[in-house]
Picture 1 (cartoon, rainbow, N blue to C red):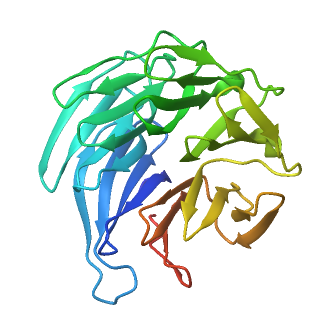
Picture 2 (spheres, helix red, strand yellow):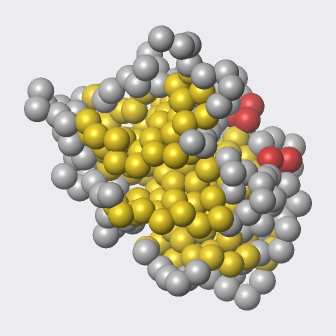
Length: 280
C-alpha cells in the first residue's frame, strides 16, 4: 500500500450525535478528500460512511441547523449537500480556508484571495473588498455584525453598511474567532495571542507559551484549540489544559456536543467522554 498522510480539517455534529468529518489524504503527489459520517462513535454499532469525495484538499467544514453540510477546498470551490445530493460551486481562483454561516441562506467563505464571499440562498458573490491578506476565520452574531481574521494580523468588522479594519497591537496570525454576543467577541492566534472585546475596543488577554487555533463555546465554557498541546478552557483570565494526547486545531459546538479535529483524529466530546475515529 502506498504511503500517505491523513489530515482531519474539521468535524461537526448533528443533535443525535452523528459526526461529519472533512478528511484529506495526500500520497506525495495528489490530494483526495472525503466527508465521512460516523453514526454513533460511542456504540459498537457505529456506522462509518463516506458520503462525499473529491480529488482535492478539503480545508474546512460547516453544518447548518437544517443538516446541510458545506466544505471548501484548496481549489477555491465550495461543496454543499447532504446524503448523496451535492453541488459544487467555483468561488475563487485561489484556495479557500474557511466556510461558516448563520443558516442555509446566509453563508460566508474566504481564503487566500482575501475576499469574503457570501451565499444568499441563490448564488455566491463577493461580499467584501480585498482585505489585504489570507482569511482564516469568519464569525459573528448577525449579518450586520460580522468579523473576519487571518494572516498578518488581518482583522476586520462589518456592521451591515461598511467594513472597518481593526488594528490590534500584534503581528500574530489570527486563526480563531468566537462571537459570544455583540459586545463580547474573542480572537485567537499564534504565540498565545488572545484579545477580547467588540468593535474598536479590545483587551489583551493573551496567554504566552503556546499557539492558539480555533475556539468554541460549549456548556457555558470557552474552549481553545492548542494544536499539539491539546485543548484548553479559558475562564476570562487564564487558560487551563483540559485534555491532551491528540492534536487539536479545529473546534465546533452544536450545544449538545463539542467536536475536535487535528492530525488524523476526529473527536466527539459530550462533557465526559472523548470518543472518535483515527483515520489512517
